[in-house]
Length: 284
Image (tube, rainbow, N blue to C red; front, side):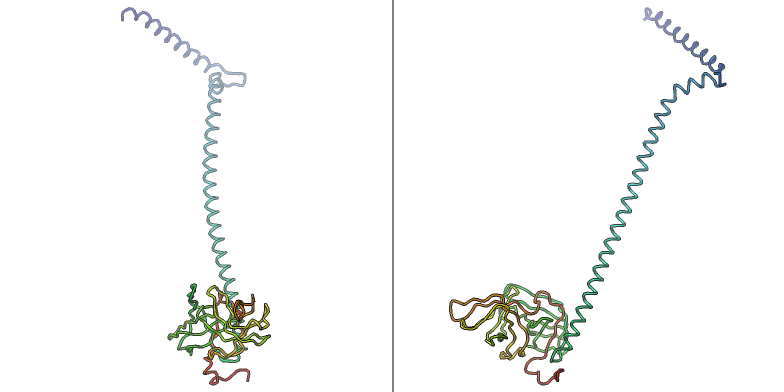
């Protein structure tokens, strides 16, 4: 340890010398001035520190720019979210208005059609649907209170829909002609051939018991014959879509329903056939 003391003393002396020298330089430079009257020390410090100041200012500016961009981005996202919500509400309002207009137009057609029916009818609205592979029925918002009766024929804007099979105080159940167990006595308008229409369970109808000898063509209109005791004569049932001679005595005929069975909304319930004579016909 004693051998290191002279070296340490020399280093200490050197450091002290340089410190004193730097102090003198700073003192002298603080008193010296440039041609413009500025302190040489001040000018030197500016020259040394200016790069650091510029770098610091640039860093602060970059941080401020990023922050401002982040704040602006959050504002834009919030505005976009609010605009999307407003657009969704406007679209919903537009669709509701369109549905109201369509309902008004449809009801106007219903009122016009009701005035043309030969019998007094009850206007009912579909409130329930029961559609399966074997049984198809609907529920309407009219029942005993409104005068609905069992076996009352039901028609839509295009033609025959079905018949009432159950009645409650304020609702009624209607068996559609597209039901497999339904049966409607009909005749072909052009050839006057008779037959029976039943449902296929998939929205179509089939015309049975028409002889292979009869003249049946695609597009032929089929209407009720009035011989089944349930449906009055002259109601449109459907049109022939396909026809072919069957393997036995009768043709195989498929019909498209005259009424849009799958899109029913408002219906007309007629009085049962056995009570039709009790009602005054509007056309008389």
